[in-house]
Length: 67
Image 1: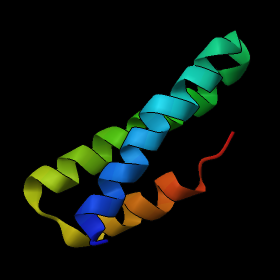
Image 2 (image 1 turned 90 degrees about the vertical axis):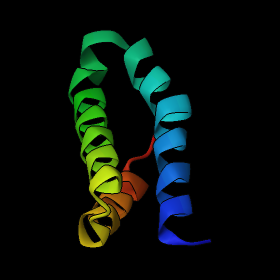
Image 3 (image 1 turned 60 degrees about the vertical axis):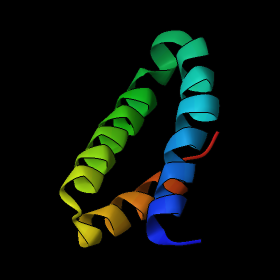
């Protein structure tokens, strides 16, 4: 798996699993869901620019988010 594939996989995991979980707990999950959304946006921008270093940083950040 290359960086782009891994980053897309992490983005999808966060969108499909983590965001719904944090959103479902209401205000208590707001901080975490906001952080996840910000990192996803940053990752998508890095992919659009082809910024490999930022993509790697975002991959690592997304990888650390858990339920």
